[in-house]
Each structure stands twice: as structure tokens, then as C-alpha cells.
Length: 249
Image (cartoon, helix red, strand yellow):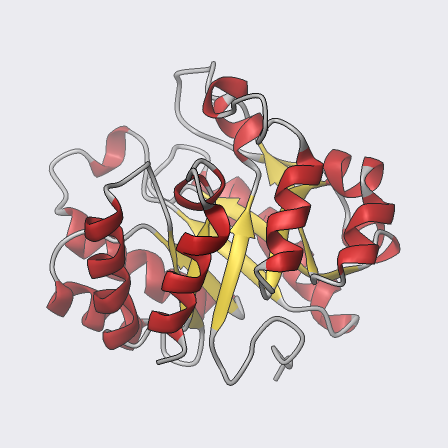
């Protein structure tokens, strides 16, 4: 069993995600948060359990990341949102590269339901095998996407994504929260000993966000991997503290 102690505190976790630049383009950014140093500073002052970067930022801002002492999680694959066909996200960084950058964990996205699902699953298995040999935790982002999932219920797909993470050997799975509280509880049960974190997702009203976080923790998730709802916030450390109070209540 891979230890998650370097990425959790008392079994819970709050990760600051910043892979949106590749995934969405710089449209999510303003003059402040376009600068990775601003994100690193939030993670440092907010005492996050992990900071999620693609390899380019992890490499170019390595000095600042190490100085922050926030555990680095390197995303090993990625894609832009420009291509509108069946989704596939190829490996861009190796486990060895991530380790050299000081990573305490690695992440990988799989789009279940895509025509390319089998290729992504196979690529993930190679990564998981290599990372576990080197005692490195593996986080998998699992998002149901593609024409095959049309007419499927989002809440059923959420639990399928959770179960897939367990079956393929992920240590932590990042899910999008769909459906109701009971659906999320079932997804957490479906994940077994694979820990569940929820994606922060699109910008939300603060009251709605905090209410949803309460549900996430009460359902048995260990925490969140959140980005825009923190670094787009006018007071990122203030919202961070409110989130942490819910996670570690």
C-alpha cells in the first residue's frame, strides 16, 4: 500500500490545481493569476497539501515551488480544448522526470467512455506500475466523456468513474460531483480503499461552494482539488481558510 502521508494531513487533503492553462487556455486568468508565482504564494500561505502543475511550470518555477515547501503533484498528461473529437489526453511527462522535479505524487486524466479509453487505461497502467515501484502516489482524474455516454445518467457515471479508479490501482481519484448527496456516498463506497477528492470545477457563488464542500466531506471524500474557485477569488486566502475549516472540522 502506497503511503499518502506526504499529500494528506490527518487523512484529509486540499490540493490547489493549476493545470487550466493547458486544458482551457489563458481565458481563465487575469493579470494576477496568470503568474504561477501568485499561485505558489497562495499554496504556501494557505498551507495546501499539494500543488498541481504540468511539467513546464514545475520545471520553470522549480526554485519557487521548493522554497514554498508545498508538495508538488505533476500532471503527466494533458490536452487543449481546441480539438472537438473524441477526447484523449496523451502522456507528456514521465515518472522519472516528475521525481527529478521533486514531485511527491503524479496525476493522470482518463476519459472513460471515449473511443480512446483503452489507450488511456493502458498508458495509465504503465505509469501506475512505474510510480508504485518508486513509492510515489498516483492520482487519477476520471471524467466520463465522449459520444458513448450520451443518455447515461451523470450520477451513475460518477460511481463508475470511482470504481474504475479502484480497479486500475489509483491511490486517489479526482471526480466531478454530479447528482445528489446519496449518489456521492455511493461513489465513495464504490471507490473502496481508493481515496476520493472532488474537483472544484467552474466558478461558483461562495455560499453554494461552501455548502457543496460540506456535502463532499460528509459523504466520505477526503477533500478537494480546487483551482478557479480559489485563485480567481478576490481574497484567495480567506476562502482557503473557510474551506479548510470544513475539511478539518
